[in-house]
Amino acid sequence: MRIAIGSDHAGFPMKEIIKEYLRELGHEVMDLGTHSTSSVNYVEFAEAVARAVARGEAERGVLICGTGIGMSIAANKVEGIRAALVHSEYTARMAAMHNDANILTFGGRVESPEEGKRFVKTWLETPFEGGRHLQRLGKIGELEEKCKEG
Ligand code: RB5
Image 1 (cartoon, rainbow, N blue to C red):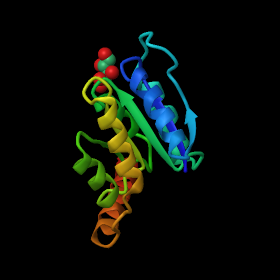
Image 2 (cartoon, rainbow, N blue to C red):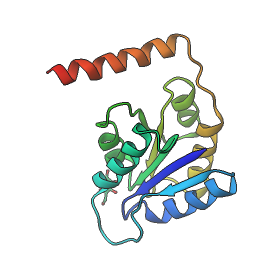
Image 3 (spheres, rainbow, N blue to C red):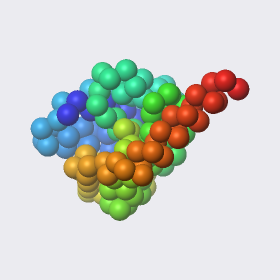
Image 4 (spheres, protein in one colour):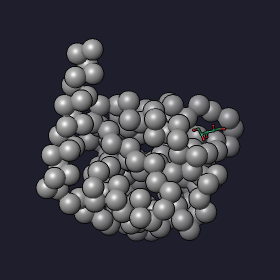
Protein backbone atom coordinates (compact mmCIF):
# COMPACT_ATOMS: atom_id res chain seq x y z
CA MET A 1 0.00 0.00 0.00
CA ARG A 2 1.05 3.61 -0.52
CA ILE A 3 0.89 5.31 2.88
CA ALA A 4 1.38 9.01 3.67
CA ILE A 5 2.80 9.77 7.11
CA GLY A 6 3.16 13.02 9.02
CA SER A 7 3.82 14.34 12.49
CA ASP A 8 4.62 17.46 14.44
CA HIS A 9 7.72 17.76 16.65
CA ALA A 10 6.07 15.80 19.47
CA GLY A 11 5.29 12.92 17.14
CA PHE A 12 8.53 13.04 15.18
CA PRO A 13 10.46 10.28 17.02
CA MET A 14 7.46 7.94 16.73
CA LYS A 15 7.00 8.86 13.04
CA GLU A 16 10.54 7.77 12.27
CA ILE A 17 9.94 4.41 13.98
CA ILE A 18 6.58 3.83 12.28
CA LYS A 19 7.95 4.88 8.90
CA GLU A 20 10.68 2.25 9.06
CA TYR A 21 8.22 -0.33 10.35
CA LEU A 22 5.80 0.31 7.45
CA ARG A 23 8.68 -0.14 5.01
CA GLU A 24 9.62 -3.41 6.73
CA LEU A 25 6.02 -4.53 6.21
CA GLY A 26 6.47 -3.86 2.50
CA HIS A 27 4.54 -0.59 2.15
CA GLU A 28 5.58 2.44 0.15
CA VAL A 29 5.81 5.43 2.51
CA MET A 30 5.43 9.12 1.61
CA ASP A 31 6.96 11.12 4.46
CA LEU A 32 5.32 14.57 4.46
CA GLY A 33 7.23 15.86 7.52
CA THR A 34 8.04 17.23 9.93
CA HIS A 35 11.69 16.27 9.77
CA SER A 36 13.02 17.21 13.22
CA THR A 37 12.01 17.87 16.83
CA SER A 38 11.94 21.66 16.24
CA SER A 39 8.58 23.08 17.25
CA VAL A 40 5.99 23.25 14.44
CA ASN A 41 2.18 23.40 14.14
CA TYR A 42 0.52 20.05 13.65
CA VAL A 43 -2.23 21.51 11.43
CA GLU A 44 -0.09 21.86 8.29
CA PHE A 45 1.09 18.24 8.47
CA ALA A 46 -2.43 17.02 9.08
CA GLU A 47 -3.53 18.97 6.01
CA ALA A 48 -0.72 17.59 3.83
CA VAL A 49 -1.43 13.96 4.72
CA ALA A 50 -5.22 14.37 4.61
CA ARG A 51 -5.11 16.04 1.19
CA ALA A 52 -2.77 13.33 -0.14
CA VAL A 53 -5.27 10.68 0.95
CA ALA A 54 -8.32 12.65 -0.25
CA ARG A 55 -6.71 13.12 -3.70
CA GLY A 56 -5.82 9.42 -3.93
CA GLU A 57 -2.07 10.07 -3.94
CA ALA A 58 -1.88 7.75 -0.93
CA GLU A 59 -4.30 4.96 -0.01
CA ARG A 60 -3.98 5.57 3.72
CA GLY A 61 -2.41 8.06 6.12
CA VAL A 62 -0.82 8.01 9.55
CA LEU A 63 -0.62 11.16 11.68
CA ILE A 64 1.19 11.45 14.99
CA CYS A 65 1.34 14.41 17.37
CA GLY A 66 1.78 14.46 21.15
CA THR A 67 -1.67 13.06 21.90
CA GLY A 68 -3.10 12.39 18.43
CA ILE A 69 -5.96 14.77 19.27
CA GLY A 70 -4.91 17.82 17.25
CA MET A 71 -4.06 15.68 14.24
CA SER A 72 -7.45 13.96 14.27
CA ILE A 73 -9.37 17.23 14.66
CA ALA A 74 -7.47 18.88 11.80
CA ALA A 75 -7.45 15.90 9.40
CA ASN A 76 -11.21 15.43 9.75
CA LYS A 77 -11.78 18.93 8.32
CA VAL A 78 -10.73 17.64 4.89
CA GLU A 79 -13.61 16.28 2.83
CA GLY A 80 -13.59 12.50 2.49
CA ILE A 81 -11.28 11.96 5.45
CA ARG A 82 -12.19 9.60 8.24
CA ALA A 83 -9.35 10.03 10.72
CA ALA A 84 -9.52 7.82 13.82
CA LEU A 85 -7.66 8.57 17.02
CA VAL A 86 -6.87 5.20 18.57
CA HIS A 87 -5.45 4.20 21.92
CA SER A 88 -5.59 0.41 21.89
CA GLU A 89 -5.41 -2.55 19.53
CA TYR A 90 -9.18 -2.88 19.87
CA THR A 91 -9.88 0.70 18.76
CA ALA A 92 -7.37 0.32 15.91
CA ARG A 93 -9.24 -2.80 14.73
CA MET A 94 -12.64 -1.12 15.03
CA ALA A 95 -11.36 1.96 13.15
CA ALA A 96 -10.90 -0.33 10.13
CA MET A 97 -13.76 -2.78 10.69
CA HIS A 98 -16.58 -0.35 11.50
CA ASN A 99 -15.38 3.10 10.39
CA ASP A 100 -13.21 2.33 7.35
CA ALA A 101 -10.85 5.01 8.70
CA ASN A 102 -8.50 6.17 5.98
CA ILE A 103 -6.20 7.93 8.45
CA LEU A 104 -4.96 6.61 11.77
CA THR A 105 -3.80 9.02 14.47
CA PHE A 106 -2.27 8.37 17.86
CA GLY A 107 -0.11 10.06 20.45
CA GLY A 108 3.64 9.87 20.23
CA ARG A 109 3.78 11.00 23.87
CA VAL A 110 1.12 8.51 24.92
CA GLU A 111 1.99 5.21 23.25
CA SER A 112 5.17 3.16 23.27
CA PRO A 113 6.78 2.37 19.91
CA GLU A 114 5.59 -1.24 20.25
CA GLU A 115 2.01 -0.08 20.79
CA GLY A 116 2.22 2.29 17.83
CA LYS A 117 3.46 -0.53 15.60
CA ARG A 118 0.70 -2.86 16.79
CA PHE A 119 -2.01 -0.23 16.17
CA VAL A 120 -0.82 0.46 12.64
CA LYS A 121 -0.43 -3.23 11.71
CA THR A 122 -3.84 -4.15 13.11
CA TRP A 123 -5.55 -1.25 11.33
CA LEU A 124 -3.90 -2.09 7.99
CA GLU A 125 -4.65 -5.80 8.21
CA THR A 126 -8.29 -5.52 9.31
CA PRO A 127 -10.89 -5.42 6.51
CA PHE A 128 -13.88 -3.07 6.52
CA GLU A 129 -17.02 -5.00 7.39
CA GLY A 130 -19.36 -3.02 5.10
CA GLY A 131 -23.11 -3.70 5.49
CA ARG A 132 -24.74 -1.44 8.06
CA HIS A 133 -21.43 0.37 8.56
CA LEU A 134 -21.32 1.37 4.88
CA GLN A 135 -24.74 2.92 5.23
CA ARG A 136 -23.48 4.93 8.23
CA LEU A 137 -20.47 6.15 6.28
CA GLY A 138 -22.89 7.29 3.58
CA LYS A 139 -24.61 9.39 6.23
CA ILE A 140 -21.29 11.01 7.15
CA GLY A 141 -20.90 11.93 3.46
CA GLU A 142 -24.40 13.44 3.53
CA LEU A 143 -23.47 15.44 6.62
CA GLU A 144 -20.40 16.82 4.82
CA GLU A 145 -22.65 17.95 1.97
CA LYS A 146 -25.16 19.54 4.36
CA CYS A 147 -22.38 21.46 6.13
CA LYS A 148 -21.21 22.88 2.80
CA GLU A 149 -24.70 24.26 2.26
CA GLY A 150 -24.53 26.02 5.65
C1 RB5 B 1 2.44 19.90 21.03
O1 RB5 B 1 2.96 20.37 22.22
C2 RB5 B 1 1.11 19.20 21.28
O2 RB5 B 1 0.15 20.15 21.68
C3 RB5 B 1 0.66 18.50 20.02
O3 RB5 B 1 1.64 17.61 19.63
C4 RB5 B 1 -0.62 17.69 20.10
O4 RB5 B 1 -0.62 16.81 21.17
C5 RB5 B 1 -1.88 18.44 19.96
O5 RB5 B 1 -2.98 17.86 19.91
